Length: 196
Image 1 (cartoon, helix red, strand yellow):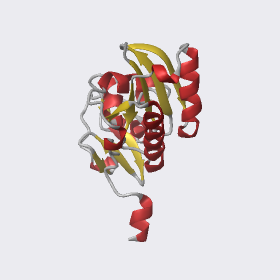
Image 2 (cartoon, rainbow, N blue to C red):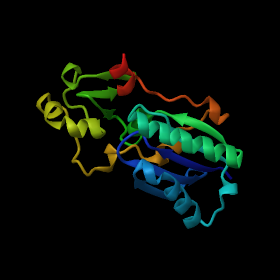
Image 3 (cartoon, helix red, strand yellow):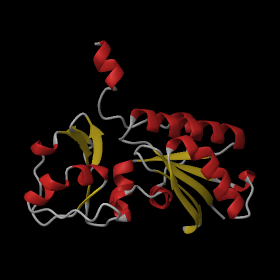
Image 4 (cartoon, one colour):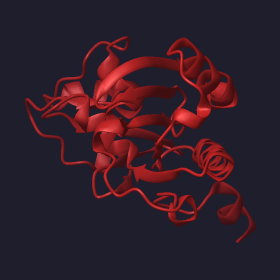
């Protein structure tokens, strides 16, 4: 039995899931600030105990610097307390897994988006593929630009816009010490650029 706790806090909608041998036992959406409560609820609703967990699948970004740090801090705390291995999963990869064939786009703020590569770029500088499907909060924010270029963006409420934690669990493969997880920031934080 592989009971994996997966979560991602890199975007405005934090997602978490409890997955047992690829069967989703529970899944939640909230905010990064309620991640621990969500984790507790998932484990309880599944009738499991934290000691039953066998690993963590953690979203490493790109996305919000604060969100990524919250997720990694929670992962470190849980891994150390429960002696768990962890695997980092790109938030862009999880978005893509939830919408096969789509191009994931995460709102990077500062009038930029994160796209596969990964890289941060101004939306107007993207080579938008006519007829392609774009998903993620960046696709929502810049919908008009994408649609004017002939791309397709699902409705704002479509679940393909969220990096569902169930896909983090499915993509996780290189489990190891939690201290080896590295955030995927792509660019310098606002605070560093302001100080520079």
